[in-house]
Image 1 (cartoon, rainbow, N blue to C red):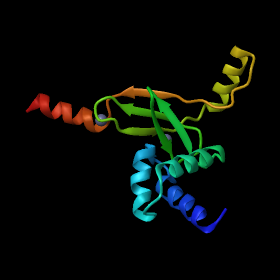
Image 2 (tube, protein in one colour; image 1 turned 180 degrees about the vertical axis):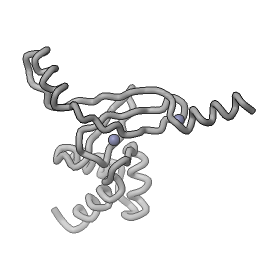
Image 3 (cartoon, helix red, strand yellow; image 1 turned 90 degrees about the horizontal axis):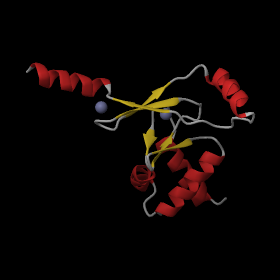
Amino acid sequence: MNNRQTRQKEAILSVIRGVGVHLSAEEIYDQVQQKEPGIGLATVYRNLKTLCDQQMIQKVTVDGYSFYDGCSDPHDHFICDLCGKISDIPCFEHRELDVFITKQVSGKVTRRISVYFGICEDCLRERDRKITS
Ligand SMILES: [Zn+2]
Ligand SMILES: [Zn+2]
């Protein structure tokens, strides 16, 4: 890997890495461009795939929309139907669930994606404000 490639990969990682970071490939591309002008979208996609393969980040696809998660630890997501905000849900019983599902399918669980939908705290408050005023 040459210097430019290393720099590009680090720039992408610095945008996405972290707890609570959920960005689409296009959003990552926009931010990386400010650090690495001239980087191509294909390069961003290729690096994101490599980072996922190396389990440094994870990709979550819901209803045909994909976002990248800077936290590689297994956790679930809550998506607000009104504003689209994505929140992390820590999930402690993953191991027990995996054992349960392994028994159900007589196979082996290697990954899981759970997404919950609803209305976030901010939108609920906003709705209440509109109702009472
Ligand atoms: Zn919301
Ligand atoms: Zn997450």
